Length: 112
Image (cartoon, rainbow, N blue to C red; front, side, top):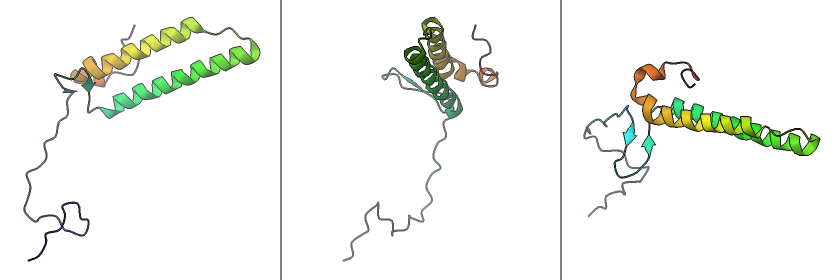
């Protein structure tokens, strides 16, 4: 009696039986019972995260400049940029990704 190898055993070759191809999903991933919107468009998510990181750095350096030199902290400008960033993040991840035309628009167009 031989024991079959564990499924996760790296020394065990996969079954030669062909498996059905995995499905490919290339649209928004919306789960009805989970209030969130997921997307397969990683480039849009990456741009959103980069914008958030840059805004965080701008806010940090503005605060440091205020502390170090007494410069006026640009509260209104930074708050406005954060609101716009959040709006664009919502629009691209929830609405615009449903429209292929929106994906081809240059970043920042049509955002008022």
